[in-house]
Image (cartoon, rainbow over all chains, first blue to last red; front, side, top):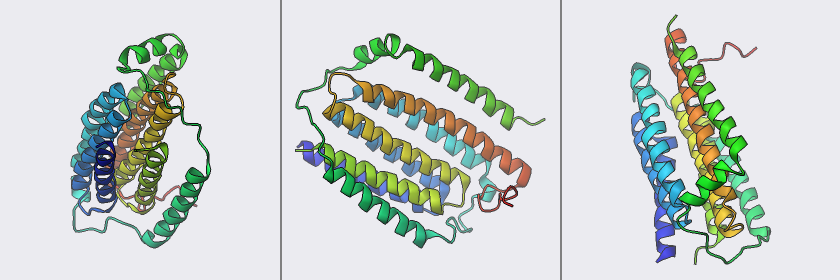
Length: 161
Length: 102
């Protein structure tokens, strides 16, 4: 049961990711990206990360891809399906990623991870909230500052002066 | 039984697909989409390690929250730059924007 769900989600993730990088119409790529993010959220649920699954749907599916689609719409005249969407380097890129994947697979299978058979605490929302407000309060505040800087920076970069 | 290696191999595959898109896409928005795919593969790694190696500490999940935040900030600034490129150069293809290249 669990194995079947994992393989179905993995197939959805990899198929939609391949379509994101290969489709001619960039708008269809954005829609495939939404499907990929939903499947990754499902994978988080199989990994007992319920809060992260909700955050994934809210931020990635709800905000980031909408922003991508917005940019596609704004630059629509230049993203037509008639023009070539990939550059001259697909074969070197394919060779590079094949070599990289072989290296990663060797590293993953050769490393002996010390897997602990305990079950994580569920639901994780209360524990994550407590940790963010106690142990990780400094990174939490810094990352909120980063968000503010990114917001102001995006407005200043994109404004018409 | 799904082991840790299953998740790691899946995330390595997703990372490779993201790198392929990053290297071959001409459209700057497509490049940003590929970067988001790579962020997601890193998050799968973090959460898989959090479940299998440190099930009671939640360190990986909290790090994944920070990664998601930084990814959102990166997408915001990146898309603002894309809009600016479109307005100033009338092009969104990254092989056209090469005025800083020697």
